[in-house]
Image 1: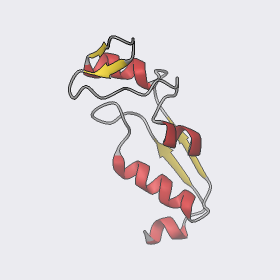
Image 2: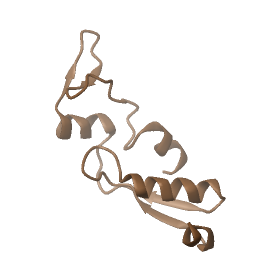
Image 3: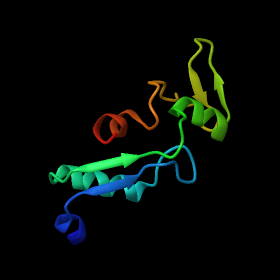
Image 4: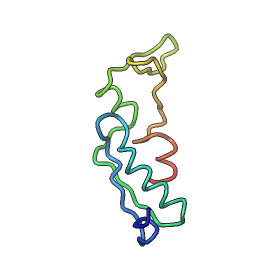
Length: 93
């Protein structure tokens, strides 16, 4: 935390880590830096959006209404055409 408070800014790798989403530690550090007013730049090392990445990594299915769902738990998969979830994409990327 001290290092984040003392730094001039944060460069965060938000590429997927062991799944569909980025590493939670990297997300925390980027969000904390942003919250204390530090500039944050982030990148993702692939070109897929969340729905496409989920289809490849998690095996998804479409329900009767055509919505994409996660086969593991049946939850809806975000389909905003963004590379990470809405909160990260709209605040950090």
